[in-house]
Length: 381
Image (cartoon, rainbow, N blue to C red; front, side, top):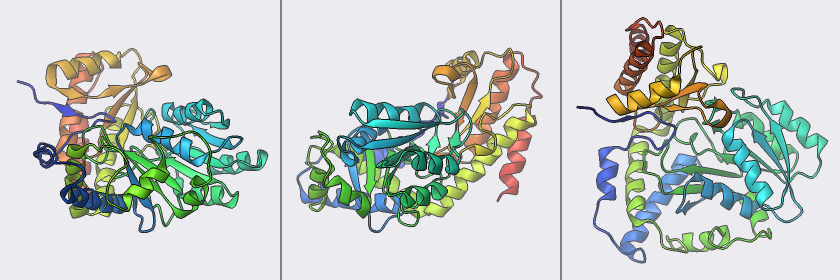
């Protein structure tokens, strides 16, 4: 018998309460009943983004849909964009900007490294007239977290908007929309929100609105102006994913009950235990001191086929890790620890990692990672 454990960068494990909420009988989306659910969900999202003044829109898409929607709404023809590229998802920002014909300047950051805020300032000085800066908060392709708190005032000083892909960062790391003066931030349902895929969320502040109202790139389904108008009536311009909205409300209720600060602390606690266990096994972290609390990226030991280990564990034990993407394929193993994850899930993950390495012929001391993880988990209480 095998049980499934999902330690991926998304989708992530879903609480039974959320699954049950999604299984409720269908209701019509143009009714007071749904409007109340949608309103409560939207208020919960404001808590998640840590905003009292921003507006949060719900999109029926993956996170990439929200990324495209942001590009289409915050830029105009002839604008310039600065994009931090530190992995696959930074590259996606650049690709989307270019799709809309936007002049795109990139800051290319070495894989496994975080962007230096000073490099953003230098780029803004070098190329006057940049309208929007796009970055990820957590680059899940490499396991890196960027210092958004330090980046924001630099962007503001140069009169640009800051748009943050916090798809995996939200609900894992602090992201304070109001306090940090972030103009636009996005997330997806299937990461720290403990939900199935299918919804994306965009939080917009007043500074961004003064721009969005005047931009001229083509959009219809992704038009934030339409969404803003309907949000006042507690609904969406087009048919929403009703069942996912009911589930999302439940997930947000769970997050609020735990308390967002406690959610952040839990993720830091779990990430630390995972990284300490990996180091105890003689493994090297790919992102080093820049590691995010979303996942732990581990360099493949010399001579070890980590993709084979991942496949064998998934097929034989039900434990799912992920490998690297594109140029990092075969070079790293990624262990996700976000969302519906607790101490004992980390114990299972480390036990599986030890088993996979041992059976692949890597000289691992069985139990060493486990004891290290356990010590970390106990000592942090």
